[in-house]
Length: 427
Image (tube, rainbow, N blue to C red; front, side):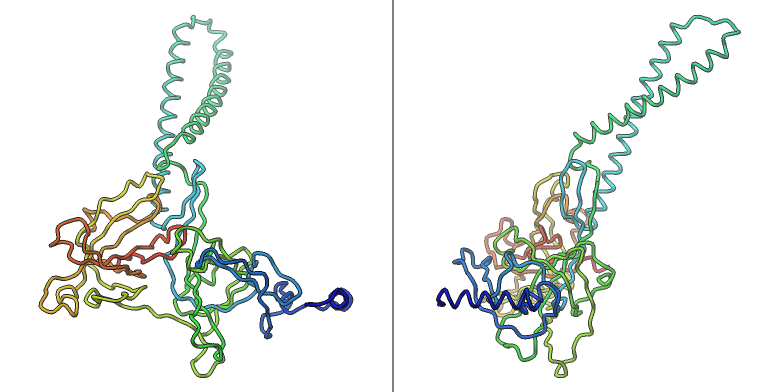
């Protein structure tokens, strides 16, 4: 605690340093991009509200000279790419709705909208042509024979009349198309805007002398309009990034537990060579992929998370959702792999294998749904599965659903949340 005289003296000295001599604190210089975030700083805990949600609590640090509400853009940081997820597309439709789609779903939406627009143009043109023919027949029926000397004048008048009618028909067709687009169903709405998205899971790059017991931080980064530097991004690559911004948490509480970042127009990505171990003061917290089989599923304890299945046979596919529905949808898949024949370890003489139940979940117009007639019996590669739990009470025949493991799918990364794996065709 300071007295009033000491507090005023401190403020007077700070004013002289900042405004008289042009000096400022290290934190302020870094936030203003006047200084790289390389020197060491001593920060104190500023005002902290009681946390209401463990997954969404925040703490404010200060250097004693000021604070930036909301954090703001990250001036410069070094990250390692943990996971490269499939590219997505933010799509806006003519009916005012917008959605995040996979590339395949976006192409299907564009094709469907183009087909619907072509049919609509043909219908409007046919109706206008039919109405014009009927009007011409009425005019011909009312016409009286003209003298020969007035034929040329009548021909010029008819030519002007045809030009006026063509303009009127074009205006009528445009009005009909606009009215039809305004009342078109969501599945037939035209695509008015599309922005590519590249989701990345980023890890930290820390100093070699940092605390080794600390849990490495991971963040789900939404890269809008990926730059050329990320065209061939690979997992394990190290970047220095300038201008990342925090992204507001959305969706479920489990998804909000992941830190979220996003790029802006001023974000720059500079690739770096990964530092060699034992020769660099930096330590890259890379997390390699973990191959997994159903035979490795334990009876007790938590299963490994974020695993890959290199070969999975689709045994059964649930009903495909209606792709024209504007709301969320879900679909179940039941899969097995070559290790299922041996049965899970630790079950003794029980020869019954386990199955993997995967729940595809996301917007009906944004996901790559499976076709029961086409994909049953197919061999797929599943990436980034978050395994859940053993469910002994799934509906269906017990001989077909014996002790399946439950896993979620995040090929869509619905609302760009890190939920679970992506489905990929190995071919």
